[in-house]
Amino acid sequence: MDTLLDIRNLSLDFRTTRGRVKALRDISFPVRKGRIIGIVGESGSGKSTILWSIMGLLAGNAEVTGGEILFEDRNMLTLSESSRRAARGEEISVVFQDPMTSQIPVLTYARQMFDILYRRPNLSRAQKREAAIDMMRRVGIPDPEARVDQYPHQFSGGMRQRAGIAMALLTGPKLLLADEPTTALDVTMEAQIIHLLQGLQSEFGATIVVVSHNLGLIAELCDDVVVMYAGEVIEAGEVHDIFHHARHPYTRALLECDPARVEKVTRRLPVIPGDIPDLTRPRKGCIYSPRCQRAMPTCHDVDPPTAATAPGQFARCHLLEGPHADPTWPPPASV
Ligand code: SF4
Ligand code: MG
Image 1 (cartoon, rainbow, N blue to C red):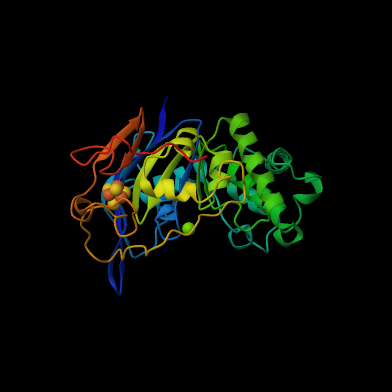
Image 2 (tube, rainbow, N blue to C red):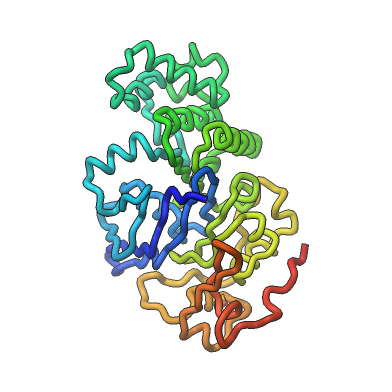
């Protein structure tokens, strides 16, 4: 399968008054064309930072210290700002967590969508309006001919998120990024947005990257998953495989806390005992070792190997490969 986006060895620091926060460390994973990939992790694990790196919209105190983000073979990290802006408008777009803050309250949806289509001088005003109405209809907004002239505050939360998705899809992007797209919504609306994204994926063949701390959403919506812990990818692969056969102790702990893990859409990440490591301090060994129930002395000193678990899938743990590999690990899933 073709790779649309390839993140390779990405490392990123934030300069803060407390020192450098090593927010991303050696992140690598491919995003395959036409797939929906979920990035899951606790807050502060770096999942949103990956999205902002792809968009080239990082905070001023962020510094990429290594790696590349290849989008159809262009490195997004070294593109000129104007090429990056062009890619962002036309080829990559984003759906935000809270449409109330990402949409412009004083402009009607028609006006906001005209602005998005500013790179299409050959389209008349009437054609742009038609495109806006058509996209609103496709995302399930009733009576789009009238509602296109309304303002964000005249929409309910769920309808506002649909409008956000319509705006993101207006230019026909190859890649859609979504940062916690349903967090501001209730359970019913959340399910509707998930089904909408799935429908759009099959209709447009779009490639979607979704960031979420909601395991149920990932299980329901995604083909592939990347599990992050404290700035590292600790396991990645196909959702079906990982949800039924996780190899990393952290992923197992997340999933085993919830027997109905695959079925429920509302599932939030469970709390695992122990603290997230301080990312300003230099680290030795496995990032998860202070909290891991299976930690061995070597885990505190030696970086775990990246073990291939299936074609295109991997997990980072001493139990899986090398001199400390445990043939009885992982135990069969308890459900
Ligand atoms: Fe646990 Fe060691 Fe595996 Fe890290 S490498 S997840 S500490 S067993
Ligand atoms: Mg976030």
